[in-house]
Amino acid sequence: MKVVREKLLEWYKINKRDLPWRHTKDPYLIWISEVIFQQTRIDQGLEYYKRFVQRFPNVKILAESSEDEMLKVWQGLGYYSRARNLHYSAKYIINELNGKFPNTYDEIIKLKGVGPYTAAAIGSICFDLPTPVIDGNVQRFISRLFAISEAVNTSKGQKTISNAIEKIFSKKEPGDFNQAMMEYGATVCKPVNPECDNCCFNEECFAFQRGIVNELPNKVKANAPKSRFLIYKVYKRMCDGETQYLLYKRDNESIWKGLYEFPFEEFNSKKSIEAELNEPKSLYGSVSHLEPLKHQLSHQTIFAFPILIEFDDKLPINVTLAEWYSVDQIQDLPVSKLINSVLKSLGVV
DNA sequence: GAAGCGTGGAA
DNA sequence: TTTCCAAGCTT
Image 1 (cartoon, rainbow, N blue to C red):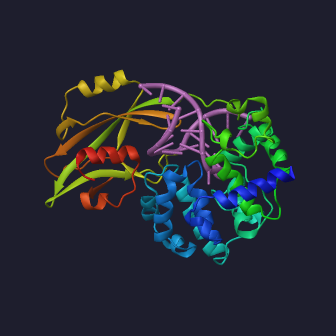
Image 2 (cartoon, chains in turn yellow, cyan, blue):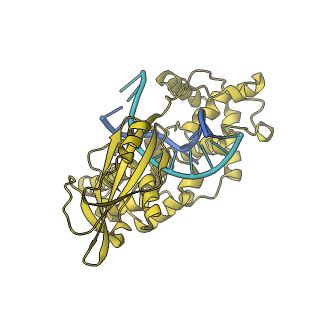
Image 3 (cartoon, chains in turn green, yellow, blue):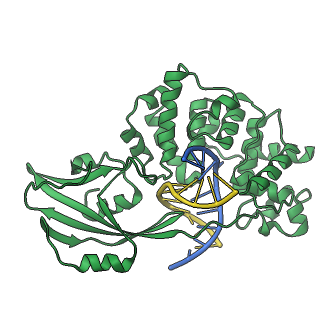
């Protein structure tokens, strides 16, 4: 297996993509890059990485930023708990660790939002710790190389992958080796249409030898997303000559926590929403229907029916914790893709 | 251990 | 159009 290790390292040194975080060993910058690219493709996150480290170039500046501002930079990237955990951990590093980034696996993994993968990545890249990473790329590359048919998204399958990595892992160059496995999985040993014609491991790859490359990795299938039906209530008013909208910050919910949105009411079917919308009523002002939106999440399908409720005066609205924001103020509020679509249809953004 | 957490691109 | 997937972590 020594030959696999050396071929992979050699391949990486020649073929690695030129990416911003590959020019540094600053644990702060590596940390940011690793968290941004959790469950996220390079194409999708690259500009976010550049913006994030430009705005928050070190852990102190991140720790001193406001949550809203940091979430605004993260807006559109998804999995917002990553951003909130970064912020929390930055304050922890400044306040509890005297600003010194932890340099052992056990200390690194204590950071909120840092799990086995990210701790191993930071440790190996920044501190030469001999800790193998296991991400989606590695699971695919290793399961094919060793023809492992166990489901990789189970603890048993993870253990098998982990044992297999030990056979080829380089403790001498752990950072490069870890990145090499991931880079190979991302660019050659791809999920669909892997480039076996262009692969230097045809002789060593058990899946290739057996003709089962496209059957691996094996995974336990995810559940089908559940449908949700929401009416978003867009309250709009003129106040002192400026247009204002009523929004609130999601503090207690799990999804989109920390982001702002319009108050909503949930229904259990599209039919019940249509019945509600067809019922003519005007409590405080004129009501008009905005463009319905379908928003696909990994685990939910949201059917959103925004309605615009325009006020003639300053009648108070009793919505918990919601506040009026001017169009200018809304530009700085972090919002989900879905709410951003509603704001676009209103011409606010 | 299983479910929840975003978004966008590819097939 | 639908499905899968992408440098995972938390509860």
